[in-house]
Image (cartoon, rainbow, N blue to C red):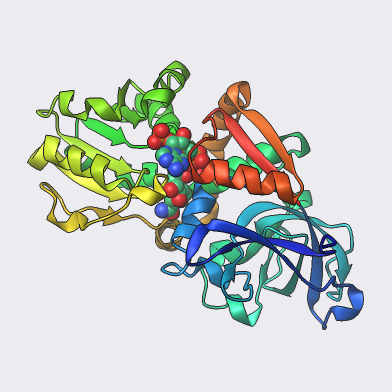
Amino acid sequence: MSAPNNPAFVVRQDDITQTGLIDQPLLTATDLADGEVLLAIDRFSFTANNVSYAAFGKRFQYWDFFPAPAPWGQIPVWGFADVTASKHPDIKVGTRVYGYLPMSKQLKVQVGQLTDSSFVDVSEHRSHLALAYNQYQFTANDPAYRREHEALQMLLRPLLITSFLLDDFLAANDFFNADDILLTSASSKTALGLAFMLHHQKGKRAKPQRIVGLTSASNRDFVAGLGYYDAVVGYDDIEQMDSTRRSVVVDFAGNSDVLGRIHQQFGNQLTFSSLVGAAHWDQRSGNSKDLPGPVPEVFFAPGYWAQRAKESGNGVLMQQFAALWAPLVQSVAQWMEIKPVTGPEAMAVAYQDTLAGRVSPQQGVIMQL
Ligand SMILES: NC(=O)c1ccc[n+]([C@@H]2O[C@H](COP(=O)([O-])OP(=O)(O)OC[C@H]3O[C@@H](n4cnc5c(N)ncnc54)[C@H](OP(=O)(O)O)[C@@H]3O)[C@@H](O)[C@H]2O)c1
């Protein structure tokens, strides 16, 4: 069978371990209506966060962004694309953008809400989805953009915005009066980002909490070596933790056994339990409502951003984020190894590796179809 000329990498919506390639019509300028723009997708990052988009595709409507014929779904990814054809008077061919993309080679968008720095894809099928995911930034007018840091931007920006919002949320709630902040899947980029931000801002906080990372035995040394956490504990040692310390847990792993054991260990000394991720996407089960201690609460970053933007304004939030982004990227650039993955076969392998948790936390996977 010859390779499709406009392939899309897809996974089965009902079994995300199954992958495939679907052929799509190759679009040209003649396929555009007024106001539409054609993007050639260049490169995108792939992390456990994208696996979570797939694992929660139906529940949180992630399959709706880039529809594929049943039973397939296109997983959204963060990356860069170039305008190759335009029927919008203010968007020129050659413009480079950053945003939410399918794992394919082309994307047609309907431009709306255009500013100097971004536009929103107002295509009908995306109108019910969060604005943060429908917005495309022009690299030329993005003060934080650096060509040489494109890989780090794709890998980190979507995740670190969540780290930033979690830091803000915890601070706004006076850290729920805790002594310790416990982060599961401490080796994930989102958890590392939060740990860095908590650590970086200790000096300006009245009573800085101890930042404790919980991770797999195999990732423990790497995580401890970064120095972002005050202590790093393997999942096997949860029962050895000091349960008299008032603690908040921020759960990036989504592993029912791990979270259950933390709740058992700390009981009412747990002052808040936040459900953020499911890096251990295949280890979710049961009902977290019956656990000892507080009922875990889901944290949805785009929703919290919208709430904070209403209170403080988008600009203020962006400035606060930029102040943390710069030192964090500087730090991560010292240790992160970028792993380029090119072509559908290599993508399928890297996808399975990410799904199975076989990617080293030191690596950042950048894909190109
Ligand atoms: N709620 C939100 O708005 C929001 C926003 C951003 C991210 N998140 C979530 O945060 C989580 C982390 O995302 P990320 O992109 O930062 O992750 P990442 O950097 O790709 O994290 C990799 C780490 O996740 C764990 N892991 C991944 N797959 C695994 C598997 N199959 N089995 C066991 N462990 C596995 C391992 O950490 P350990 O060994 O340390 O467990 C691994 O080192 C995701 O679930 C993501 O969806 C949520």
